[in-house]
Amino acid sequence: MNQLLANLDPAKIPAHVAIIMDGNGRWAKARGLDRSEGHMEGVNTVRRITEIASEVGVKCLTLYAFSTENWNRPQAEVDALMHLIGFAIQRETPDLIKNNVRLTMIGDMPRMPLDARQRLQQCFDDTAHCTGLVLNLALSYSGRWDITRAVRLLAEEVSAGRIAPGEITSEMLAGHLSTASLPQQDPDLLIRTGGDLRVSNFLLWEIAYSEIVVTDKYWPDFTKADFIDAILAFQRRERRFGKTSEQLHP
Image 1 (cartoon, rainbow, N blue to C red):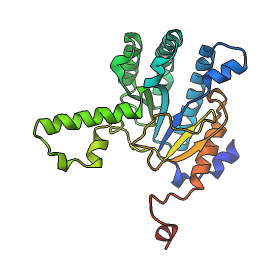
Image 2: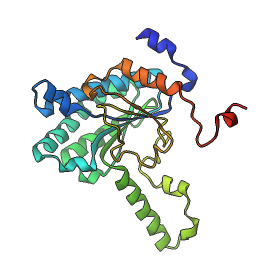
Image 3: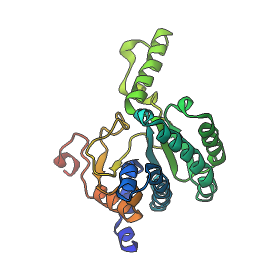
Image 4: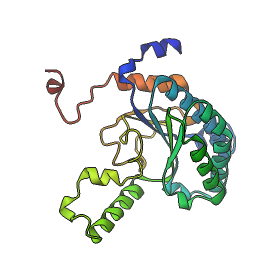
């Protein structure tokens, strides 16, 4: 572990890392357990990855915890997840404060059950003073939902006469996305566990130029060393943003 940390270039730490936390259910099924036990184990992984992200200097960690599409899962699983989210947030709040981590959320919060909303809001309030890592949970979230919401907000401004349609820019649309208040809106690095090669409606606007790392490991098995390996892979890549290598290194 220490050797892995020593290999990191502190000048090239991704400011914003986003993670699609996939594989909780498959992890549980492989062990003959109920899917809910996989989600519970996944909470422990959230804790250790939050710790290592903070330790290496990541500024923002966005975790895809519950998608808009996840509302279509069996009601018993949805209820168990909502209860787990509220319970875990309340349990982890003291450690977040101790580690100077601020909790935020993107997504359709009014759709969340009242108990989960209240516990989340309490944690937002309790960690609002923290100045270290921003732990951003994507709950009841999807990229298409967020882009549609942003377009509606811009349409309201056009209707009110505050802007003309021809004045709308990509920067204006980005400014109306729920990620606009994050320390850095666009993730430098997107990690997906569980092996699937898709982005699953996650941060569709923001990941336009994100580097992507996919691991076959299920989320409950994802370790601090795996997280560092993903950052090392990121640091070995050349980010051209549409330019050529010659333009970047004349």
